[in-house]
Every structure is written in C-alpha cells, then in structure tokens.
Length: 106
Figure 1 (tube, rainbow, N blue to C red):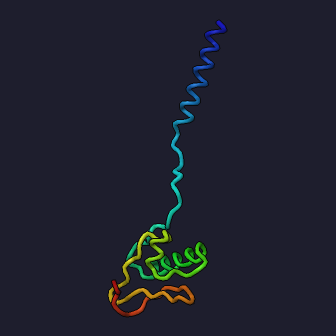
Figure 2 (figure 1 turned 120 degrees about the horizontal axis):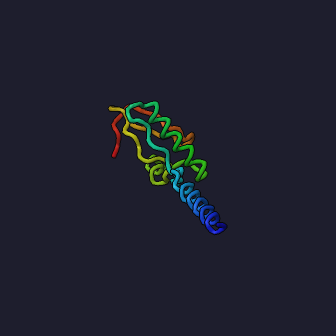
C-alpha cells in the first residue's frame, strides 16, 4: 500500500514539473536598434534620427561622421526617406539632424 501511495506522489510531482515547464516564456531577444517610425511623418523621422545620433554619441563619445554611420553602428535600422524636395542635414557641432530644402544626394 505504501508503494502505491509513493508512486502516486511521484507521478503527481512529475506531472507538476512537466506542466509547469510548458508555460509560454517571455522572449529574451537581444536588444538592438529601435524599430523605425512609421515613415511619412517628418517629425517622427527627425526624432528617430536625432535619437540615433544621441545614442551614438553616448556609445562612442563622438558625433557620427554621417547618418550612414548610425546604420552601420546599429543605432537605427535604416535611414527613413526625407520628404520630397528635402534632404537630411546633420550639424556636426551640435549633432542635430534637420531637414533642408534640396535634393537628397546618393
């Protein structure tokens, strides 16, 4: 009789471990650059780029040489397209990205 009770206790303990280990776990994906904003809002795009510049400065102790360095440095995923007739300009002294009228250079 004691052996039967012992087996039931062991069976329930094993079931508890199996069921407890089957729950959905939180994703522990490595942190990377933030996702890009919804393209189309120039304010969102400028905020995204300026945040990338700030993060780059904090990580590297300097302003990036150009916006492409934000992508290669994994601070942003990609450079959003500027509105038609405008281009992004980064002031190297302040690190601020603004929109200027003109054609984008490739």
